[in-house]
Image (tube, rainbow, N blue to C red; front, side, top):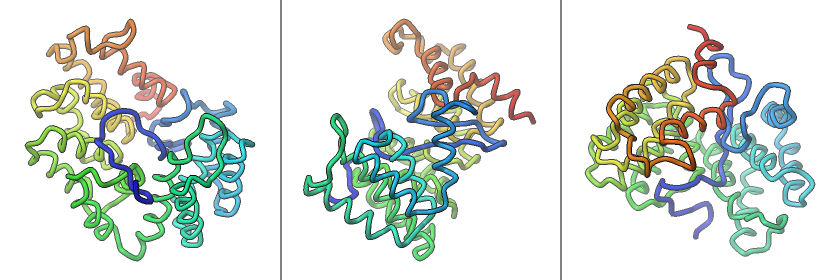
Length: 289
């Protein structure tokens, strides 16, 4: 595995780069790494403090404390994500140095953790620092030819999700044109990192009928998560409606698609609470019109 490069099929659990949003009055709370962040809880307070930090030096201190086992591993991942958001060019050398040490196996970390999980976040730090120079189109042009071969990582995906310049439209068009289901899954997974509201109708259609796009039924969770990450009242209403239409259509009726004692749709509904801390109907009330 090369520095910052993780061959990734777009299927399975995601590790190493953090999708998190707190305190946005117009979008639902979202977190992949904490269960149900709620205002006033220790986890939410800790994440909020890190996300409000504007000093890269302070954030690197948190990341170093993570490696020493003095702060929670997830807090360190959030700190690295925040460094990427700051586009701090002074952090690029540190990100590269950490990546090189991970490659060499010489970066110490607490037991039961894998320093390689940090590579996508370190890659994102480099990419975000490069965006003002290369421009969003430059970052997108670099990514596009690497997608068919899976030669990109979660750092690429996270940065893609932040791009303007029609990036989401470009990937959506490639998703619709692709004939290989595996490639379609890669494009869909990238789309699930974007907050571009123009994706709402497409993601809703995919959720209702993944099979009509020649996708495995379970991949409907990618569309659901994409609508959650957009997080607006419109996207959450679209997910609620798509869930009802999928139930009427019987898309996920096969009991083998369930998880534990929940059918597919009930399990997907429970993931909303895990990701956002509230049910969709509650978010619709809170976000208003």
